[in-house]
Image (cartoon, rainbow, N blue to C red; front, side, top):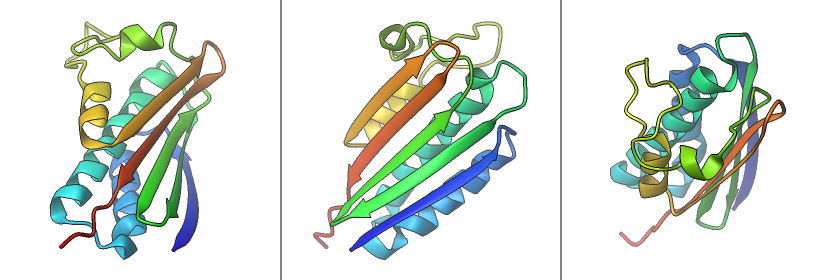
Length: 141
């Protein structure tokens, strides 16, 4: 089965839930376990939250969620056209946060990496950030 979807929404925290629900609905035809579904929703939530909080530095902007299913693999891309990340490797270190004055734990990328099978982050200052995540749905029940 192959399928694709695209969703674009304003960088408002209320849209994080929208992204989670759309991702869950999109992957449902693969018959994921409750655990797989929860992991996908959490990874999407972390990526979208990063785009909302860090991408636009308190200015308005759009966040995009793309999904692709091929075989038993689901691939999601969360992207923004915000300020970008100066040092992606540093940003992906556990407990690192670009906003230490906020109540953030710095575990977003770590959570994405632990719940998805593959994650790639590309970012350019002043251009934006793209987070690509892939997960194999086991279907071995």
